[in-house]
Length: 248
Image 1 (cartoon, rainbow, N blue to C red):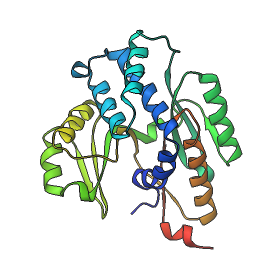
Image 2 (cartoon, helix red, strand yellow; image 1 turned 180 degrees about the vertical axis):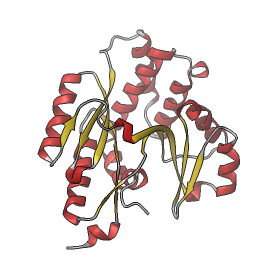
Image 3 (cartoon, rainbow, N blue to C red; image 1 turned 90 degrees about the vertical axis):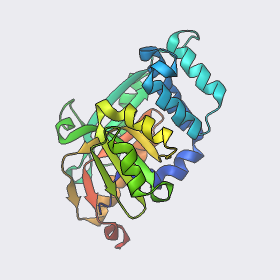
Image 4 (cartoon, rainbow, N blue to C red; image 1 turned 30 degrees about the horizontal axis):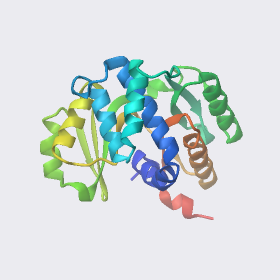
């Protein structure tokens, strides 16, 4: 099993993200504003907004925060222009990283992302340098105790999912981007709670990292990137044997 995976990253940082709930609310709020701006304020006719509102409620985001984010998107409340940006770069050992940012100041975000790469053994690359190594797909991570494999398969395959991966403690569901909101709706209707649900960058192949020090540096870079205020998510294309990190 891959030592570095979206599941491992999600679980590893969940406590930290919960402790920094202000950042979590900020990121979700920005996404809601963009969704309302692009698709209108009625969740019934805006699948992205509907999914984000469900995500916000699951994170215990106050209803007033959600309402303000929607109104900023529709222009009912004043607000700054929010952009979604993607940065590509290389980390220790030549691993590939894609960093998703939601920001109201792209100059600040670019400076912070570039600085973090530089300080932790990586460097930014040009647009398109790494994206071809990844596929854009819908990804849902679900605790094993939240459902059983048969129920999950019956739910998501009919909704358009392409693949279900069963691990010891979780399930991973993958679907085409075009079916993301259909699958998300099916899971919600079936009352199957997800740990995360997003349009993901899934690597076509992964680089094995066999040196313990390189592995630690790579994970440290991802941690510092994830802690930046505007960073929504970080995706990587490497595998680590967990036993490596236990070596001295």
